[in-house]
Length: 330
Image (cartoon, rainbow, N blue to C red; front, side, top):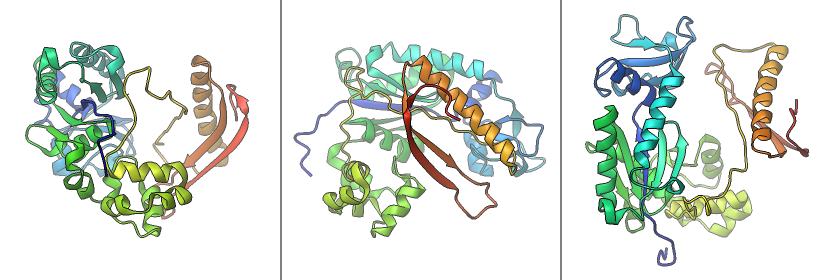
């Protein structure tokens, strides 16, 4: 692959390790990497849902986001705490303020409450190399907030994210750098294929049908055939396998959000049709409200439902076109 015509930026992807659990650890005067804290909604119920688990809990007990209270061993060292969302949002604001010391607002993209991208291409004169900037951001967050961060560095958003997820989180320094020049030694070595950003179980299953079992095989597949079979997504996956992503972080170049979504994990099994409809209606109400706030209309509605872990079937996914609207659509 010829990368000479690809744009190169200096992107860093920053993740606060086990954010909710880490904030609770700091509030208790415990190092986030040494605590045994689980943040759980509805902890009074056996089906209470784990929202975050500290690194030690993940490593020693296998408890992670999405686990249930009934999976936590009795008489363990684990301390269960209820979520304090206002506190987490406040701390997230402090982290974003630190980012603004290194880059302008247009070079910040908040990916989630615990993960963000920074374009530091124009920050070198003040703060040094990309690695030095990443290290300074990491140290500043630790010094002021006592939170541990992992950082991926790359030529684009994709490479920075992959460096974070597949290497930085497991390094002692918690910093990893992936560039176009080492795609063969980095991206092509990602295994299993679902560890690739953007490839879930469903997409992986479709790729397996084509005989594609690795990122390397994906990178060598005929791109025209991928596009013919899977449309634009197939073509995008091919280029992602080569580390190519055309997204630009600055607001004026970044594609605007084209979808509004809402997901929810229920604390018990729902089997009655009426109850299921109530949940869907509540989620539709929230999405419609967000559409109105953004002065947007929707023309395609998609509904995905997954079953509980005891059900063999994976669930289903349906979508349909509707007349453009911002009103509640169920």
